[in-house]
Length: 251
Image 1 (cartoon, helix red, strand yellow):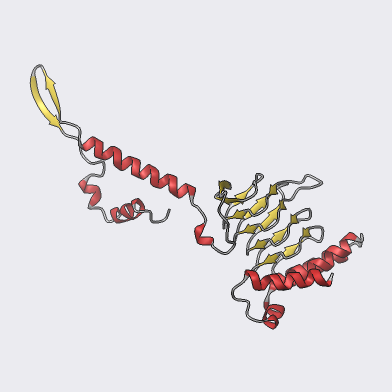
Image 2 (image 1 turned 180 degrees about the vertical axis):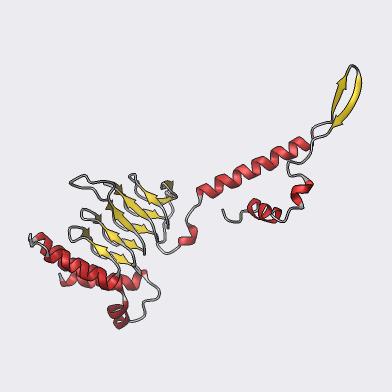
């Protein structure tokens, strides 16, 4: 048990650049306190002791803002960074050296009995605000982007982003746990691709020859293609926002 608690303590220095000395970590890291409270509650839960394990988990929730059911299983070296609002369900399993940020939920999707919460493999990183729901398996070395909602199994060595979570394979590339700025954005890429396609079609329309309208042999008008964004639209104050969006702002 002592070696298990020690590994929970030591992993913080590997995962958090703000961890400067052992006293600060011991006194000021609620994620560590929550995991240590859970170790005790889980041990008592395994003995079949009623009420007391849940009471311990509620005391831990009061002081740390992290709610971990005593029935959940947490592997060695797991680290909950900041941790406020983290919820871990009764049948959840967290593997070794996992990193979980604030606002994460490892929850269920209904009132079914038995295994109803997710299983996280080793070295999994779950970004802030992500929700992993149901009896699903998250493979080893998976990285879940902030705010994602994952409801399906995820293969190992992958990155998951979006709502619902979409898998982006990262084979052959080592995933660094703290490099959150390198998480891919498939939805933004698709939107940018569609914008480029629209602009390409507009340029093709402008290159079309003029169309002559004839009625009984009389030329009524010559119609030339115009840009889809008319001058009166460009003079609108909101057009600046349109240009910003075309440039990728907000995507």
